[in-house]
Image (cartoon, rainbow, N blue to C red; front, side, top):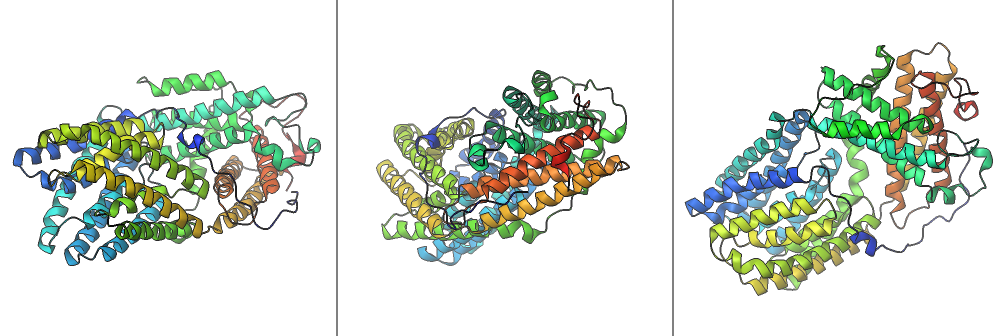
Length: 589
């Protein structure tokens, strides 16, 4: 393994993206599911409160209803647990907020409580990888509740309303299982196949005479500028996305339980096909992979893999994945400490700044700051741009629809439902686009207790958005994340160890299939972690320069070892003239 070339000890600041942060992407494959789910979850409690003449209680039912936004990509067994956890987390944050609101009216104390809650919610959502919408919805619920008039005797009743709406949201989230019980794992497998096909097609286009399975001509052709070359290598991003998609597919399949059905076994084999295509893209058929993916997204049966192998060794991947030791709670939370500190400091300062300006709803600035914090500073900046653009456009949209919402309680609820659907339908294309609907929805929620002056709401929300984004980003600049570089170093060590273990298994002619498979899975997982750590650290400021050359070399040699392992397992025919010890020079310990 080559050592990194000498580099400066501190990385200089970089240009922050602006136009790129607003670029629209493709909508999610299942954008309509969270959109319809939130409407189905919010509508019955809201309409019932309209009928009872108690729309002032809709803030609490809305808290539970919004839990339907979560876990749509998870298999239903895992979704049941995840949604239950979200509901409990929402109730915990709401309880703290309501008790605090009933005990004190001091705005500074309430903002401080809201900032601490936001930091805890951020850390827990990231640690559990709950997925979109992450901590933002939970922080909005708890922060808004901090400034709702409250007495201690009312708290149990309000929590009961939120719990009932949360139970209904759980049922809404689980209802699609009655129609297509294996839909989430089929989509995860299809995504893995598509990602593998994209990499195989890219690698095939770049492969030339003497190139290996990765489309590179080997270490001997390096011109000494490895890091610079890798930065522009489209293969690296496609390969990393492919392995991340495969790992997600395995996790999705494993979360369905330990008693796989015939359909589940067929999905296992398809994920193995994706893994093989990533390890040896030159021998993969991208069109075949895409055809399997299209079939999985339909309503028909899982396609049978046309493969002559009939033994069980091909399905050792799930067993190896199950054998991977689980990380401790501290091991998960410790790397998130800088993000939690950023969130607490940024939210607190944003709320205090809003109070200093005399804004009556400082939780808007607090939530804006909480929504900014991503894996690194570059992504945090992009989210700040998206948040400001979306919110400012959203307040204009609110001003246009406010006269309609003021026609009566029923019109108000129907407007909320329309914006709820629009937010989830658009947000997967870009955060700012969804924010155009999220902002008027949040403003309409403030009118559940009674009509507000539109001009004042629009002005205060615009000011709080700017204050929250500015102060929140400054707080992110102030709290550096030195651990990002440390994580890269740990991941490099893990890749080196996993590669050496795989090389030893390859060198042993008597190595059992289970040993080879476990070594391959460990190395694949280590490479995925390394790429994620390098991507996160590359967008962080004010830290030691990253060992880019070591990262590139570790990835190249690691993926060559994976290709050799795949051949040794017999999952692919041996390449002409290579034998089973493909890339022998690169896989030695």
